[in-house]
Image (tube, rainbow over all chains, first blue to last red; front, side):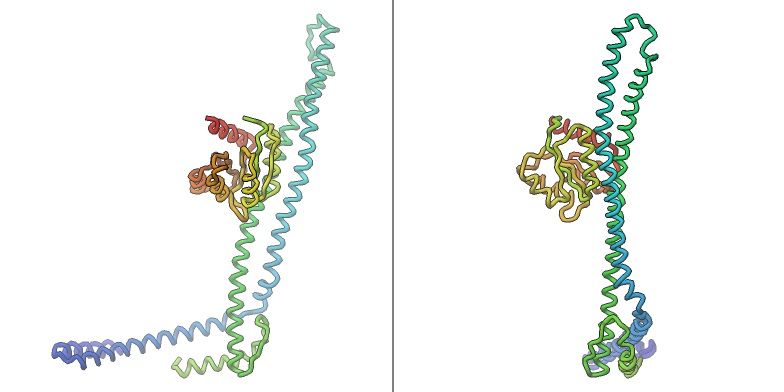
Length: 239
Length: 128
């Protein structure tokens, strides 16, 4: 109903109401409502046709199916393999560090003992030696060993802490796997929906239950005839 | 601080549990035990004898936060000191953990010194 017609109807409605003619007024109201429904119907019809056409163009091609069936599971497996690999490497390093730390600490303790022993001995034999212990090569060596042991210990501790990379990277990778899984779920749903539509169309056209595999192109020929069905249905409705 | 105190380390990554265990040993604490998530940690704690818990937040099954809640609502465990060591660094999470009753919060990556400081600080407050 165009604006002019609507305006004319509205005027008739007002007149009918002013005259107290309820029957006439209701009748006009119903006709206005009916025309509203009709245009709504037209809009829905257009949308349905549009959606139908769009779904046909998003073809369920073999690549998409391949990604869902093979590539995504492979990707997840590879990511998990990375976590495992880094875990093994970190544990190997921790094993080495765990073995070395006590060795280094014992070395430092023993160096101390020897140094004290050496100092006592040299003091006893050189009571008037004012040159100090800096001259004795053995002393130098032991003092050096102590300092080195400290450095070794510190660096080993650094190596120990650095293995936290495995935990931090592992957590990040787990999040990525979760995202991948979400995408996988959506793809599987999409494939299922698309192939369900195909299966339904196959059923309608042949009248025979064609139980084809949902994820292959087997439904293609049937698709044409059932496509015709949908098209003719839409056409008969004016779309 | 008693060096013999029984400590439970909870983290789903075995490498992290090991790092913390080795750090604790460096600090003189050798009475350490491990669990890989809240679900296996809780019965261990309920078995009794633990003096300290160090836990991660993100774990499968029961998270560190849920474990903390369970500890605080268990009459036998409610006063158990809990130190959270986690990669979760959002302000809201720190606040939430504090509200539930965590005694300390360390953000990964952390240093050995930080671990030592936090443990000492928690122990001081617990004694007081």
